[in-house]
Length: 203
Image (cartoon, rainbow, N blue to C red; front, side, top):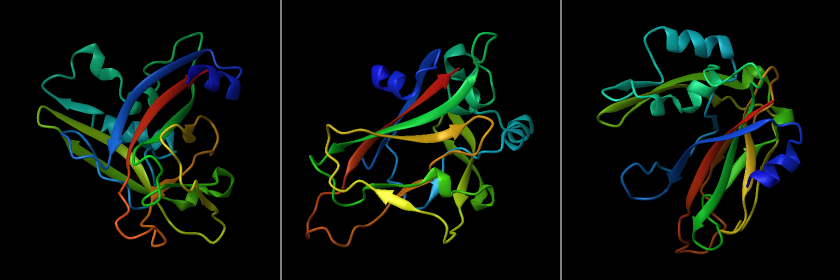
């Protein structure tokens, strides 16, 4: 993917892949398909810093003292991986279906970032307990506005990738997203399983 990302962002200095999430699967660690418009990360930097400084570290538990556990997206958003030569500018989602071969039901839908207003965000403080680890994050649910424009890619197949903005530094440019039940699919259509990677771009 990196040659494609460099074409989209020719000024990027550093690309770092952070994590991936399987949605719709039934294995340990898989997550459900998102069924509500949201942003994985609230777009207010100062609120995020306050959230984590008030006793909610991105990762809490027995293991996070190891350096490898400072690789979560909230760590990147808090500037931990910035250096004198490059700073985080964009956090992307890189999404593709794993099965079925073509997705009809529960496709990914994204909002046109140009139609999102700051006031469309509503704070969503959440924690996920993984036993030895607890992941804390400040996300956002989305309040409907008639100005919003939403799109989805019908019948996206397993060889096609959708790239969208999770976060942009110093400006409001992100794609709220969700999936939805598609009542137009044939009866018995297989529900999709997908993978979403997150990638940090430094400039």
